[in-house]
Every structure is written in C-alpha cells, then in structure tokens.
Amino acid sequence: MMPEGHTLHRHARRQRRLLAGERLAVASPQGRFAAGAARLDGRRLLDVEAYGKHLFYRWEGDETLHVHLGLFGKFRTHRTDPPPPTDATRLSLSGPEAVVYLSGPTICELLDPGDEERLRARLGPDPLANGTDPSAFVESLARRRIPIGAALLDQKVIAGIGNVYRAELLFLTGIDPARPANELSSEEAGSLWHLAVTELRAGGRSGRIVTVVPDEVGARRRSEIPRGERLYVYGRAGEPCRRCGTPIEQRTMAARSIWSCPDCQPS
DNA sequence: GGGTGATGCTGAG
DNA sequence: TCAGCCTCACCCC
Image (cartoon, rainbow, N blue to C red):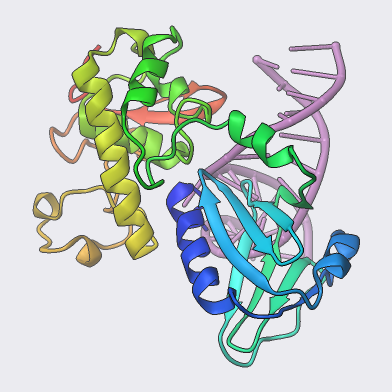
C-alpha cells in the first residue's frame, strides 16, 4: 500500500512480465469499468508502462488503458489459485500465468487519441524514466517561489514523488521544506534529483520505502531494518531525530502533513 | 463492529 | 482552501 512512483514502476515491470504478449480475459466484476473491459476482453496485451504515478497498458488494436491508483488503489496479483473477485474489483486481467485484480483506483479508463499527450504535458520529469536528466527539474524549481516542500508534490515539477518521499528527500538533503524552491542552489536542486533517482530505484527494487542508512540503526542492510525504523521523519512528529535527537516537527504544506528536523534541516 | 486515517488528485468556490 | 471520491487496514470498543 504505497502508491508513489516506485510502486507503479514495480507494478508495470511485474505485470509486463506476467501478462504482456498474452490474450487476456478482461472483466470489471464491480461493473464500473464494464464497457471498457468488454472492449479489451480477449485482446492481446502488448506492454505495460509506468510514468510518474500513471500506468499505461498497450493493447493490440491500438487501445490504451490508463490506470491511476490514487490514494486507495491497489493491485493484487495471483500466480495460482486466484480467489474470486470481490464487489470492489474494478478490473480483472486474466492470463495463463497470472490474474491481476485492481480495486479502488482513482482512474481506470480507455484513452482517446490525444488524451495521453495532454496528460503527459501535465507531468514533469520522472526520475525513474530512462535517460531523464536533472536539468528540467532544476530549471523548474528555479521558476517557482512556492516552498520546496510544496514543489516536490507538484507532479508537473517532478512526476512520481509522494508524501513519504518528499519528506524523506528533504531530510536526506538537509533542506527545510519551507525554503522557496527558487532559492535553492543548483547543487541542492541537483542533489534532490539524484537522491530521488537513487531512493525511488531502491524502493522499486525492494517494494518498500527505506531511506534510513543501515549503519545508523545498527543494521547491515536496508532490508534488515525493522518496520518503524525505516524512515527519518515521515509520520514521526515529536519523536527524536535519528541523527541528532531533536524532536521532529510536523506542519501542513500543500494540504498534506510534512515532517522535518529543525536542526538537520535549518532554515 | 464502528470509526478513522492513508503513500492522491480534482474541481468548485 | 476545501470537500469529495475511491477502498482497506488498523485501532479501539
């Protein structure tokens, strides 16, 4: 349950591996995507791509299915013995190797020509996309006076960052969330981008968000860090900073809570 | 069993 | 800025 960009890229890889190339039975047990499912039923799925928090399914016959999980959306993948879908299953994709159920998405729709282009125009660079360089992100920050904590949630500035990563990336770079985006140095902006690439990749590999450096909690690997010790600041209001012991602060920024260490992220 | 909040986003005001 | 939407896991009784 962590739909930031790394999760979507992970889903895309997994579903591409399990379903692409196959003719799939497509249904909408819940009924809210019935017409779209009927249109796709029996077609061959060609590819699954992720960009930011969006998924695009390419089908033979030039159809594109667009899925956005929003806050609540969830995929369940069954390699064997799939349970029956529930009345919350918006979409089911059934192939010879696996069955994928989707529940609770904000978006599950077929795209018309031009829709995808318009959608992509609203998205900034994705740190998980191949060959993306930091310049678009750095220049975008330089044009904005909004706090960096707000800018990181703006999908037009950087696509795929969510509320956990925005707080953690700012801690890791030692940047106060309230600082105006255009007042960051280009070094700071660059290191935010590079950390986003590194951290989202790591999250995509493991399937969970672990930003804490293992040494600092007496572990040898990130995968050994117990639940509850994997993040520096997210959700830790009032608890001591893992680096300096100062109580973590919570405030609201871009209508969401953000946490930071006033000592490690000085204004 | 009910209440709540959550890793998101949009559109109305 | 804020309500609304989608679903589920978790907490407390």
